[in-house]
Every structure is written in C-alpha cells, then in structure tokens.
Length: 264
Length: 356
Image (cartoon, rainbow over all chains, first blue to last red; front, side, top):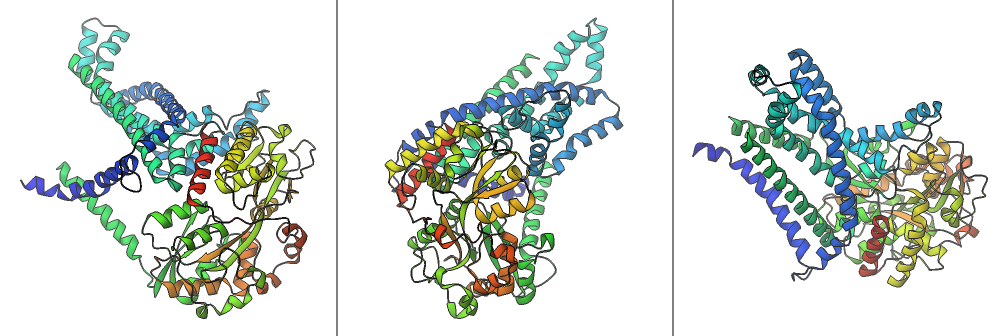
C-alpha cells in the first residue's frame, strides 16, 4: 500500500503530461472543429504515405547500420578489462553531452562543399556530393543514435555468465558455435531494446533531414511540424498514424524477443 | 527502491523547473516576454549594442527573449495556446490577421512618446489603418543574393533566375509558404497580395517545376549556405542579404526586375499580455534614435525611424538594397490577409510540393 502511494506523483505526471495530450491528439485527428467525427483528416494524412515510407526506410536503414556497428563493438567492450570498459563507454557517451543540434550542425560543416572531408577526397580526385542526399541523412541518424544501440547491448552482454561460454567451449564448440548458440541468444533482449530505442526516434525525428538532406529527403517529422502550424487536425492525424506504426513495430519486436527468450 | 529513485528524480526535475522560473540572484521590478524573429535584434556581438541588456539596466525589467522563424509559427503559437508574450513582431499580413482574430491589444500611444520618430510613410499602413495595434520595427523587400563566382557568368536579373537550368543544384528557395508562393505567383502573372485557390494551384505547379533544380528549402540556414559558398543563389529578406554580403565579398545582390514583396514588421502586444506597461516601455525604448540606429545597423533591415536613420553610416543610408528608390518601391506589392481557407490551402499545397 505504501509503495503505491509513493508512485502517485509519477502516475499524476503520466496522466497530465502523457495520457491527456495523447487523448487530445486522437480527438483532433478524428473530429472536426464542430466536434463531428470524420475520417477526412486521416485520409489527408494518407496522402503523405510516400513520406511515411521514406521515413520508415531511412529509420530501418539507420537501425540496421547501428546494429551492425554496435554489436561487435559492444561484444568487444564487454569482454575487455574493467578499466577499458569504463573508458570506452565514457567515450561513447561524451558526444551525448553536447546539444543535438550542434552535433548535426558539425556534420553540416564536415560534409559541406569545400569542407574538410570534401577536400581530402578531392586530393584523390573523388568529387561526390557528400551532403544533401539520403546518405547524409542516414549518416546523421547513425551518428546521433549509435549510443542508444551500444548501451543496451553492452549492458546485456556484460551480464552473460562467462561460465556458460566456458562450458560451451568445454563441450567442444568452436568460436562460431559459441557465438551462435550462447552469446547471440542471450543478447536478444539487448538487441530488442537497442533496435527499439534507435528505430523509434529515427522514424519520428525532424531537423536532421532539414540540415543534412536535400529537397527529396523530407521526413514525416518535418511534415508534421509544418502541417501543425496551420492545421492541427491533419497534424494530429499524421502523428496518430505514426504512433500506430511505431506501436505495431514495438509489438512485433517484443513478440520476437519473447519467443527467443522462450527458445532458450 | 527503484520507485523511490523515480520519485526523487521527478522531484529534482520539478524543483529545477521552479528554480528557473523564479530566476536566481538579481531581483527585477517586473518582466516581459519578447517573441521576435531569429537574428532580429542587436545582441552585443561584434561590438554592437546589447539592446536587451541596456533595456534591463535602464528600467530594471527582465526580458525573456525567444525567437521564431516564420509568421506562421508565431500565429500557431498565439492562436492555439495561452501564451504569455508581451511583445511580438509579426509582418504586415499577419498583423492584419491577428487584428481580425482579436489576438492583439490596442497600444496606448501616450506611453510611447518616441512614436514621433517614425516617418509618416510608415504610419497608418493598410494592415492597421488607424494605427492602433502596431508600431513599425523594420521594413524591407525580398531580394536575391547570389555568389558571383558560382553563377557561371550568368547575369542575375530577377526571380526568373531561380528557375534557371544552368544553376541546377545550386539554387536555394525560401522555406516559407507565403514568400515562396508569392515568387511563383509573380512569375505566373498572379497578384500575390490576395489570390484564389485556383491561383494557388498554378503557383504550386510552378514550384513543383522548380523543385528538381533546388539544393534545399531554407530559412535561417541561408546564412551558412550562402556565406559558406554552398549555393549560388537564394531569395531572402534584403536586410539579411546585406549581412551575408558583409560576411562574404563574393556575394552580391539583385533587386528583382519583376518587382518584389515590400514588408513591414511591427511591434505588437498580444491580448494575453501580463505586463502591458512593460511592453510599452520596451516599444518606446526601441524607438529611441540611438537604440534604433544600433539595432538597424546590426539587423541590416531598413528602419522606419527618421531619427535613427540620421545616425546610420553613410554607406547604409545610400545602399540601394536597404533603402531602394521610390521608383523601385512603386513596383513592389505588400501582402494582404487571406481568407482562412485560402490560407490553409496555400500552406497545404506548399507542404505537398515539398513532400511529393
């Protein structure tokens, strides 16, 4: 009973700042100014399906690259000496102490025409547009959200009991078998939370594409921001659609995680 | 244990928020919330006058200063939430809209003796015919900024050059529905002051044709792009074009031969103000000759303040870009308020162009 009372402030917080706004978004999305239920805003939101698809594609690509980069790194960190672990994790987190916009802005400078990277490539006779395309947007996303993939993976991998690996080795498993039969299944919870923590913000973020992308890289977050300025209803409908997509994604991810856990 | 930590963290957040609200250290006689365009006030950098600090010093009133990027953003904040801004600085057509929707409060001009410094030309403008709600802050036209080394020897004459195939991939377009549509309308022979939905369609089509040639849609990003020689040409507000040219000698300007948009940004007091006297003190302070001159020089926009104008350096007074000739201004038009549905239609179409 006592512990329930202590949770009250947080429940209140959730109610006022999460549930009520969520209810308002839904109400705006399905009702017009006169208060009648209507599907017109949802159907207007449907008009932006190409932008949705593009955003999901960018999010998926960024998440996959994050996973590919973070997985081996997290494994290596979790096997390193305690002091090395602390140092490397610190290095992973340092960029997060800086403002999000500043970091993206730094990339704008790095990738700009005649900028550092362009000049270096120019020496080798390579002249490609580094900024203003989907590649640059994905790069920005990966840079921005990589720590969110590394941290959960590292935490989960650090908890893997070394004796399990030793047991597998004793039983004659080679390196690959140890990885596929012991490490990989045991790290699934880390993968699931890492993927969720990267995919969800990349799918909904704005500004990154405005800074690094070209005219074709508009993401759904940017559209929502613009639409909201004059049309709360369509803006809410767009947000609602995005929330549903993300919710579906999370459900699928959790299913996947649960099954894997049962499989072990 | 976890729950306790959770609660503690929430408490820390709450206390932190309160601490910032109450402000720490110095005590003020009051405060005003000023909501202005980005880069639109002299802030003490590059040896300029820090206008806000001067005001706080003189009247012992704290100024909470925040910025927005477009009139539309300002409108959505003023119309949708119980904001508590005391000063906003919208453009002409937006003022007309805000007055029509009863979002502004009448200014008591007895508290603003410096209003006499404003030139007669900028009083009683069409958006506020009896001049009850607004005091002009700056004015200007939309001009073209281009990089002389990047236009492939082309002579830049007007807005039509923003559709120039030769500059493909190096063109920036303004990321603001009203301004972008206006440029497209001028080129399509439509009057951008006031228009119909069908005319919006025509302009949107014109913008779609332009999109493959563009590098980006920009607002404040235009400074980095143009000053850093990342793009060849961009339409933007004359005062900002002037600043960009100061920072990169390769840049030059062009007053579009088609004529352009003449705009006035004016200081207004929203209905929801908590400190109207403070706001009026601020307006009066901004109209002081010296403050106005420092401010105009920093922002680069044209000043409607005759006393301030006299204090400006000669090269600014004589600049065709900032103070275009009467003859050029007679070719310009200003925006009128649009019907609500035409306005949202225009906004919607512009997002569609960007999203397609």
